Each structure stands twice: as structure tokens, then as C-alpha cells.
Length: 187
Image 1 (cartoon, rainbow, N blue to C red):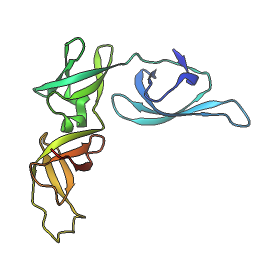
Image 2: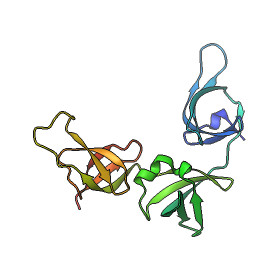
Image 3: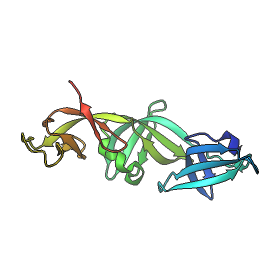
Image 4: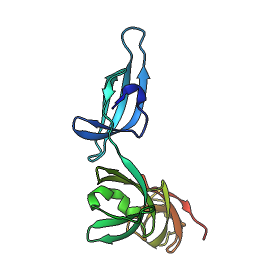
């Protein structure tokens, strides 16, 4: 148990029988009346975001979420197998938990896995990864109808938009949060 005074970004709360991550919080002390805490919470499993207001000093139940550094090993059917770097224990994580992160996941890549009561909740990848562009059509000079971008397929199978000058076989840096092209990587 903690109070609303102990809230911080990234803290996981057990609220209404579900797990919620604190995305944002603000202590408000109005001139009249009692202080309160305005929060933005994200449901760990569904991703739903809600705004919730608590009176200052209200007790909230925190969830014991263990974030571990793990290495992605391989895909087994639709599941993903990760290995704990300290204990060498392997954990099978369902595709629904990995979700969109699968588009940027390569063998032996480091990721943070959040676990609650032995159940993996979500994985966090580094904010950017370097992947090889395995296929893209050549950009034509003078073709500016698409704003200077063209589709490209990465080595993981993900499709992103890249500038016309990026060719097949080049390594590109990609933002894992939204799939944006960040630049070319010199080998």
C-alpha cells in the first residue's frame, strides 16, 4: 500500500481488480478545498487510458511488478521465448503480450519484460533499433507525389516509410514506439 503522495511515473497500481500504470500525475492544491492528485492511468493488459482524480493522501494499492532485462531467443509457434540474463531461466511470452514489438524484435536482442505473479504483462524495447532494409523499390527522381517517401520492408517483416534515397540492403534506424524512420546507419 502507498498513498497518492508516493505516486510516480511508471508505478503500477492494483486498482478495481486490474493493473494500471501511472503515465502522468499532478498534485493540485486549489485555493479553496482540499488538495487532490490528478492522474492519467494506462491499463497494463488492454492499453486503455483513463484520467482519474484522487484526494490527497488516499491509500492506493501498488502491484509488485518485476522488470527484468531479458534476451529474445527465438519464436516457437506464435509465442516468443526470452531468457533471463541473470538466472538463465527461459520464459515463453504469448504473441498478444509482445504485440507490435514483434515488428522490431531480432534474435539476441535485449528487452525489458515486466512480470507480475509469474505472468508476463508487457515488454519494452529500446526506443530505437537498427534493422536492415530487405526490400524497397528504387526512388525515381522527380517523383514527389508521395512526399519523398516510399514503403520499405525490414528484416523482421515490418513495413515502414523511408525517404526515396534509401536503398535495399541499407541499415536504417527505426523508432520502436511508432515505426518512424530516424536515419541511415553507416556500417
